[in-house]
Length: 208
Image (tube, rainbow, N blue to C red; front, side, top):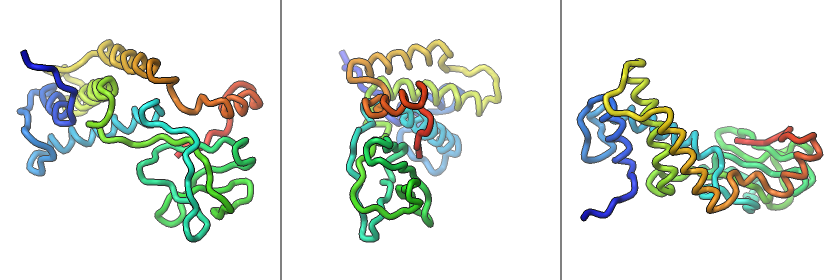
């Protein structure tokens, strides 16, 4: 009896192709198949959409971001969300572009220059094949449904998923998240204090 394996990026792309009745592929990327490239683009888009919510598996609290030689702090390419609660450094810190680079910006003092490293709560991008299975399954279902809708222009897909399937997959992901830890790292105690002071809502959030 074969042992089930986790959903791979190739599995997800092939499921997307099957939804619109197109032949599967053995490898990706495939420069000769426009439909495969479009499927991968949708999968990447949905992966980012899900990951940017901030889950236990792709989030870290109080990550030290270091000064560079110009006393500035660049945002790593793999970071898709960042927050520095006001109470942590007693100043408003956000992100802004400086040239082609994303950097931390001190809104209190109107400068990109810092005198010390900054501890931030961050959410990371991750490769599809390194995600928990519950996240892969949820992302794949969202990608299959979107790809089929885009390619078939609203016509019924041949082998797709339903809205109920998507809801169940999200519930499974949330259940996995509940076992691993609270969903969204920004539910930290210092963030809670800020929310409480601002009347029970997030007020100024500083996201990428």
